[in-house]
Length: 158
Image 1: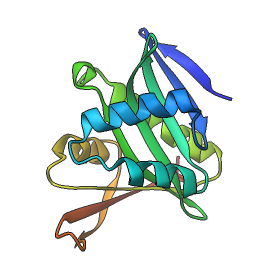
Image 2: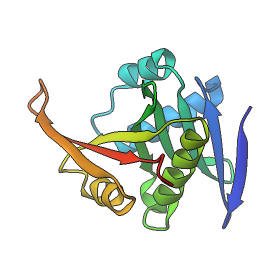
Image 3: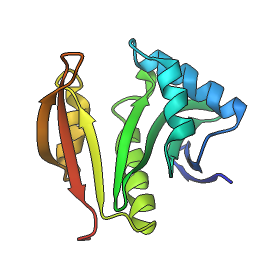
């Protein structure tokens, strides 16, 4: 069952597991709008197959304007996989609030660390990670030739 809170007319709701058809459609459309290289099959497969999936969404009225999705990585590590904000709603704190809500939720579930990855082309996300206390853990090149940066944050200390 979703729960939400209001913050300056933006409503935040969290969902565990795979969302219902209506929410999945909204989520898929926003995902495709934000990411020009979006692969809906991979997106859906991860949501359906990963354990302890957490989706936090930001709404303006009925419109989905942002999301942050993660899942179990290892027993005490939560992987913050993907997130984004509709271009008309950027730079007003929604991404920071989604990150804060995710961190609070997973810490309350007993996770000790948050892990995420980014790429140099997503500079705002990299800056947000560093601003929010993540450390760079590693850098590697994947099989597609993309350089990935792994960030991790210890949330058990606070």
